[in-house]
Length: 235
Image (cartoon, rainbow, N blue to C red; front, side, top):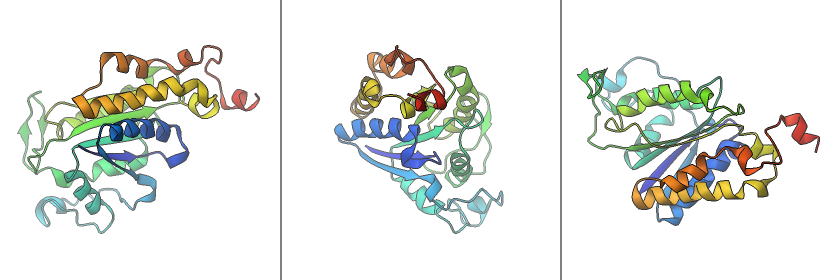
């Protein structure tokens, strides 16, 4: 199994998104998977021009000369696509949005009715990917992730044969991972590793492991309730 991860945090290796993604990929590799992470901030991926050249001039290939054509080749060679993004203004980062816009070469211009009754574009290739979403936010409530989930749900269905996301990790109060005691969250990261391993081994994450991953971060640190950057720095 090949997992291709798109890391959309502007902090790249220094952010909370990286910590969660890294643990999941470690578990996947423990199960024998091949993984690769693309840090979108480092890549030259322009916004979509809306020219439809990838449909009519060079079918299946973008006419822009940037990194996206290489990315599309990597996607076609992968089985699982992981989108990792912090929550910015209740949605994905601009880096991830640009990437998603540029997936247009993977579909055809025809209009077809999907099983859910909505009109969409058919896939250009027979391959069906499984999608995983990893996100964290400074706000503690999961309610804040709803715009992100709604947006990704519509996008993912066209590429996953209507499955939507195969697995989702959403962590509120994510800054606890940045300013809290790393030892406190070892059980959480172990659960994330287990999730990665189970996904590769069985195609899904067990109910028990999912419950550990979904457990609010402050429950891993009951003596350190969710706090601001200033209160963590003051310790």
